[in-house]
Each structure stands twice: as structure tokens, then as C-alpha cells.
Image 1 (cartoon, rainbow, N blue to C red):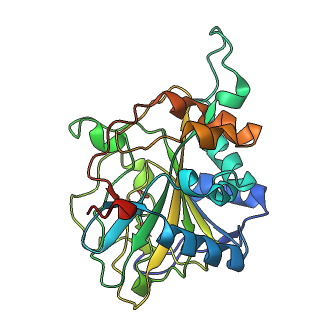
Image 2 (image 1 turned 120 degrees about the vertical axis):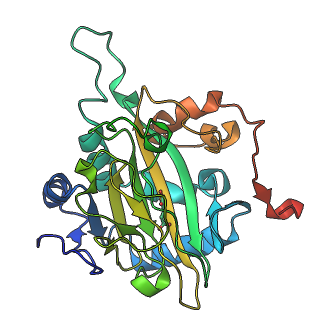
Length: 282
Ligand SMILES: O=C(O)CCC(=O)C(=O)O
């Protein structure tokens, strides 16, 4: 695999079935793009299901979060439970997922948990997203050095073509060592790269990496699904993480139940600015 290129270039990918190459690339670069992680026809089908899912929350102009996808359709589990992505999440969170030697034994199947599984839709004409690090980095004091270890791993699944003109995710290689928040802007940063990829690819990035959605200048929606993973000691980071419903959870396979059991105790009263298309709200 090549070194990542800087400027406005695309980043190299790594075959999704080669865990050791993916693991090496993630350690070296701070993130990795896995290619062909699900077949193109599966990606196309899931993209349609994201676009049809009812619960949405607005982002920047022309951008929507389609929240709590597992409550709508359990087919999204094949993304959230992808073996290479799960293995990489465990690798990144390792050392923070196991209890200390002299601590009580936390069950191994509950050391890494699934947070949100949300759709990310950049509609044609969408504005560029704001540069950020995923929670909780943005909630920590900007006057202190940020932790140098990841607390969240985000897997951004590309379900439609990701290119500069379709609004592909942008990131800054090397930002994971800066221990500062990115500037609060949406515009291009001089050292940004474009995470291009075919439908079925997935970008795996810890929450130490600066990133932002691109602007969609094409005529079709750019559709992604973000799956977040966290160690067992991290709770509900923001109230707009919507929990899995009990009756959905009851029907999940045991390994998916283990990843999501903690969500059953989350308060469901908070609805924020969520709009339910079926209810005709906006
Ligand atoms: O939609 C995108 O390209 C970016 C998504 C993002 O920033 C995130 O999931 O944290």
C-alpha cells in the first residue's frame, strides 16, 4: 500500500478481507479505507433504504442524518457487524476496552459497544460540513491538549460513489497526533484529502482524526451510514443518540444483542429536533 497523498488527492484503499494489511494501514495512517467490504448491489439496496427511512435530523444546508436505522431495518446490521470493521474497532479501542489487571472482570462480549447507526445524506447542492472530531473530543476543554488515544471509532460506509464532486468525506492525515480541535470552519483545509471510494467501501477512523463532509455538487444524493463503536465505560455521549427499540432488540442475533444491550436503558423521551416524515413534521 502507498503512503497517503496530501493536498486534494484521493486516499488509497485496502482490501476489506485483508485484516492484517488493514490493521497495519490503520496503525500507520491513523485511518483506513476498506474496499469491497460489501458488494455493490448490497450497497445500492441499503442506500435506497436509507433514503426511505423516516426519522431525520438536519445538518448543514442540504445535509440530513437519518437516525436509528436499526429500528427501521435490521439489514443495516451487516454493516455494523462487519468482521473486519469490528476487529479494527477492537484493535483501536484495545487497552481501553479490557479492565485493569486488578479490576473485576468485565465480560469480554461487552467490552466494545455499538453507539449510533445513522444514515448521512448529502443531497445535491449540500453545503460542506464543519470540520470536527467525533464526540466527546468537541465537548472537552479546547484549552487543554486533547487525549492522544481514541474513545470512539467511526465507520463511514459509502453506499453511493464517494468523489470530490459528490461530497465525499474529507480528512486531514496526521491530524490524529495534533491533540487540538480543527478550526471551526467548513471550507477546505490546505492539507485535507478526499476519501473517495466505490459503493461498498468503508472509511474507518478513530475520533482523533479531523474530518468533515464535502459539498455535493452532483445531481444525485450522496448516501453513507455511520456506525460508531465505543469502549464499555463510555455512556450515551449525546442525547441525539437514539436507542434501539426493545422489540427490535429482542429479535437480534446474540452477538448483535451484546453490542447494543446497553441502549435499552437509554431515555426515549428526548426527541430533539428529530422530524418523523410519517408524522409530517419538519
Ligand atoms: O457525511 C460525511 O461525509 C461526514 C460524516 C461525519 O462527519 C461523521 O460521521 O462524523
